[in-house]
Amino acid sequence: VSSGFGEGEPLYPFGFGLSYTTFELDWTPAAPSTESGQSSRKESSTGSMADRSTGTPKTSITASAPQSRSTSLQSGAESAPRSRTSSSAPSAVFRSVGDTHDFYVNVTNTGGVFGDEVVMAFVAPVAASFRTHHQTTPIERKRLFGFKRIGLAPGASATVAFTLRGHDLALTDAEGQRALHSGAVHVIFSRGHGQQLRARVAVDVGAAPVVQRKLPRWW
Image (cartoon, rainbow, N blue to C red; front, side):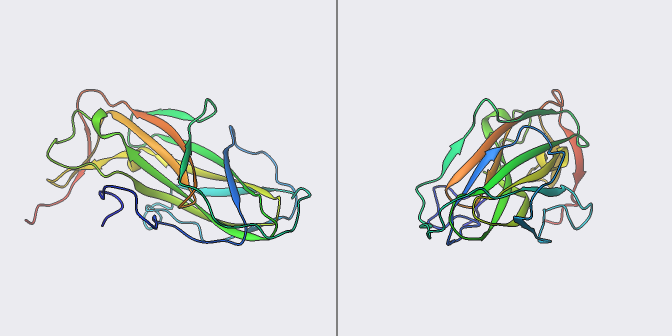
């Protein structure tokens, strides 16, 4: 079943994995200006759905030195996914395909051993808010627009940056037309299971959608 259109909660969500340590996600309000410590191992496995053509959305990390923590092994078991949408969650308004907004997420290794983690970024359109989208075409529940793999020592933190583009918020209808519609979209940052960070952005292009492209109809 597609994770974009499937209903219900899967037993093993997209990106699910086990670890010998534990991690915590939190918002970072602005771009870090400096880098300190050698606690984070930078990886080259950065990706996005747009990398093939444009190289964006871009991602980067900034590391901080580890704090003193117990080195005892911690369980990787976690409870059901919990979302956090606080007053510190960023927001933005997109008025064109070319608009962009940067999101900064702080990742901390809260366990006692070194571990790798993958932070994934999704867009989840709020279906009821899109009035100009063809009503007979289902709107996907969420779509991956970027990810970043990092390695952290016990107690170390790293800030992961993602750039969301207006292009990533476009919807495709049953006729093959891809366009930007006015509406609301949740931006979700997740490790594939457990904790999630959730922000909300708005798309405001007026009463008529902005057509990005139309695929040639072959059916």
